[in-house]
Image (cartoon, rainbow, N blue to C red; front, top):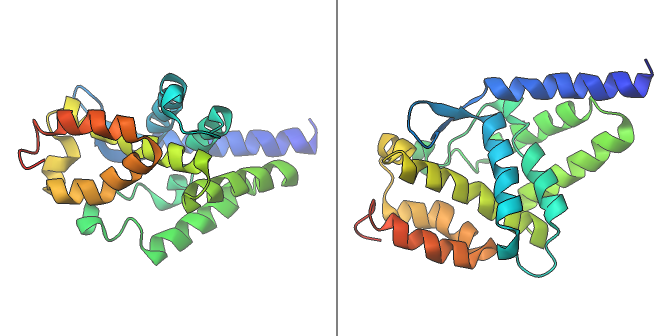
Length: 196
C-alpha cells in the first residue's frame, strides 16, 4: 500500500473515534444523547435539505465538507456544550487553542496537501466570516435547537437555559446565516420559552 493511502486510512481510522464522543444534546426521541459523528452527519443532511435557505454566494458542497469535519477536534478536546459554564467555556481562548492543536494533529495525519486543505477549511468554519462558514455555523446552531425542542427541553433543562441566553448564544448566529430559519424557529421556541 502506498504511503499516501496509509496516511489517508490512518486519518479515517482516527476519525472513527468521533463516534465515541457523547454530546450534551439528545436525539429527537430523548432516549439518549447523540454522539458527535451523528451530529456531523445530521448537519450534512441539513445543508442538503436547507440549501435553498443559503444566502448568495454560498457553496453547499463546501458547507457540507465543513460540517463533516467541524467537530473532529472533539476527538481530543471532547464536546464543549454551548450552554455549559453559562456559555463561558465554549468560546474561551483555552478551548480554542486546544481545538486548534487537535485540528493540526488530526488533519496532520493526512498527506500534506489534503491535511492543509482540511485544516484551512476547518479554520474558515471557526472564523465564521465567509458566506459558506456563516451558513454552516448557523446550521450547527439550528440542529441542537430542534433536538432539544423534540425531546422536551433536553440540554436546555439540564443547563437551565433562558430565552435571553438562547438568543445570545444561538439566535444571532442563526439569524446571520439563515434569517428565515430563525424566524421559523422563534415561533416554535415560544412553546418552550414563554418570554420568547
